[in-house]
Image 1 (cartoon, rainbow over the protein chains, first blue to last red):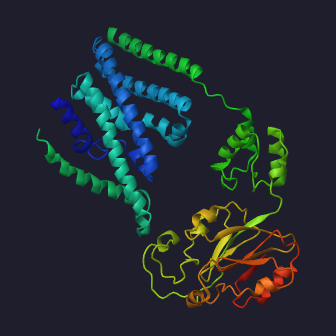
Image 2: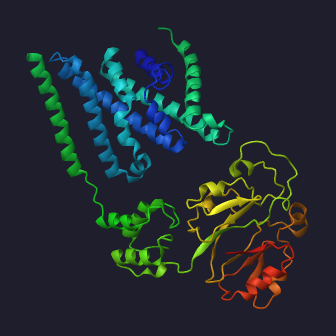
Image 3: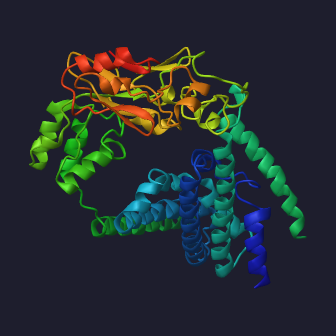
Length: 193
Length: 268
């Protein structure tokens, strides 16, 4: 139980996917302009990450290890993620058109979100068991949502500030991301290990 | 060799498995879409202006097909297009507004006429200056050009701290209405071969308070309402025009000429 909690805190604050590993920067920059769409993207990432980790772990454990094909993990995980995103998209389109409209283009974009693949690969290299892996995926998604929401909040305020012309747009966003990453480094002391 | 075959088989089978699941689900979860939506969408101008009241051209096409009426129609598309759309969904295109409308800014004061008692430094957008701002009139145009940026056709221009709308370029999409934090824009009908008239003041304060901040503001004297067949009327300490009453230009022009502060404008 304590290890689950440690994984949870670590994936959200200490080893945050965006600010520690710098994974998933593309959607992070693309969708953080408005808090509303940022939240939608975050929820989609939580959802896909949890399911992708679950399925990836099962396939890794019961197919890849069994045949001694661990080196195939990259290919298989990408396959799993791509297929899962497609399935999730179909389900959302059928059962929740408003959510489908809100997520729009970003749902298919999750396919190429490296944070998702990163989560799947990290859980293998960290040798997590099934429950830990699922938790890790969920916590990673929550961490992503947290950071993208913080960023969206800052960027909404940024609209009113006098940014020098050369810094406008992506430049200032990346500068802020760097500062945020520095701030999140402070969480490193939360856990010793 | 064994490893290669195993790897190919594993990947192939997983891939095939997922492909089967996807194929099955895409049948099972198919969302039926009316082909007329795409048909109408392709006919629309794709300006995504939102003048129809829906989110973009696609939203309009969907609403038209699902509701079976064409609402106020596609304004940039004009009468001809709306009749075609109406034919597709099988209704008459009565709802289409025949009179052309344009957007006008209800503040006609230039720099020098509207008083500014503070020097403003900060973000140069109307949205930001609306809260603090340097303009004494809390109703008037801030003249930082949020509407100029919002206009998809480039019809709005800013000269001498006053907003000008090009009646030929304006498609009455209403984007400026949304963009202006002081809600100064309004759609007014253009009278054929005459042009549009508008009272360009939005200050609902009483005479003395208006006079304090602007020399061009409407002081609610009511002179314009006293000309023959006047379409002008007073409401909220402002003069307004009742467009249902006017068919000729004369009363409009008389009112405009009699206005002591010259806040009634004719747009051509």
